[in-house]
Length: 73
Image (cartoon, rainbow, N blue to C red; front, side, top):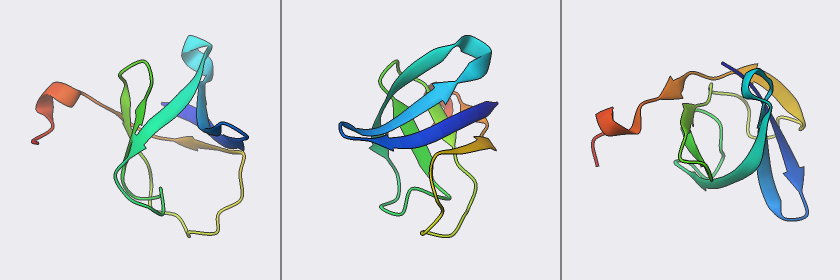
């Protein structure tokens, strides 16, 4: 699914154009963000591609949505 990630004064936000959803990123797997999962405030989780740590934002990319019921804790 296409998502756009950007930095705001309140932190990282994601926009999902297909759902016209703009929401905060509330958790991330990796400090560098890229290559791990992110959790959105609405409960959705996405797997981000591995990108360089200094990747400029905003950025639009393809990120598959992960069913959180399948994720091992």
